[in-house]
Length: 152
Ligand SMILES: Cc1cc2nc3c(=O)[nH]c(=O)nc-3n(C[C@H](O)[C@H](O)[C@H](O)COP(=O)(O)OP(=O)(O)OC[C@H]3O[C@@H](n4cnc5c(N)ncnc54)[C@H](O)[C@@H]3O)c2cc1C
Image 1 (cartoon, rainbow, N blue to C red):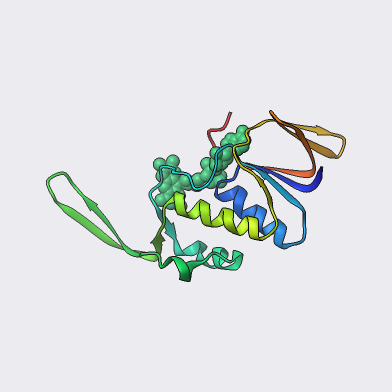
Image 2 (cartoon, rainbow, N blue to C red; image 1 turned 60 degrees about the horizontal axis):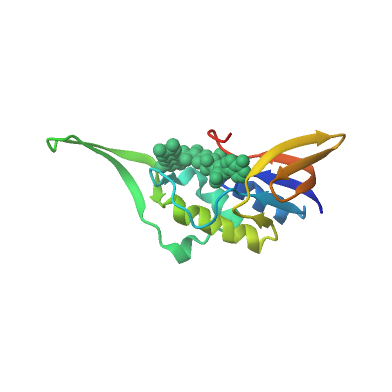
């Protein structure tokens, strides 16, 4: 099967770009080595700077009723506290929920998502990318490597 866009990695970068391309009319396939929802260590703070972008993707802020964060507070072992207002502010959300909701949006946008599928290699042959997993090779016209900093 041939797709316009192949995306390796379904974290924040992979999922958001998959939604953007699918909404623009491209056929998109995404490979994620784990499944959703999944836990990931995270500070769980997202700046309001990116809220309009997530809203544009259709992120369900109203359904989720996320906690607003307006202040940074650092507490020392002895209880001494230093605090400062956050200029832009943000909201609290776990990666468990953020990735899951983006995954749902990707599916609703028509992205073909292969979970529990680790990409082993990406090869360019002429103008075509071959994305290789243990199960099959998938051909795409473009390939986005969104597998994060720590992938092998
Ligand atoms: C401890 C910690 C706390 C953080 N806290 C915050 C915070 O509070 N707020 C904030 O804004 N940012 C935070 N960050 C930064 C944020 O996590 C990163 O900016 C973000 O995860 C980058 O997204 P990404 O999509 O590039 O990579 P990732 O989110 O790492 O996604 C990569 C995806 O690719 C998949 N993958 C990897 N290899 C393969 C493969 N071979 N085949 C298929 N899939 C593959 C992985 O399973 C993963 O799902 C934190 C980072 C760390 C380390």
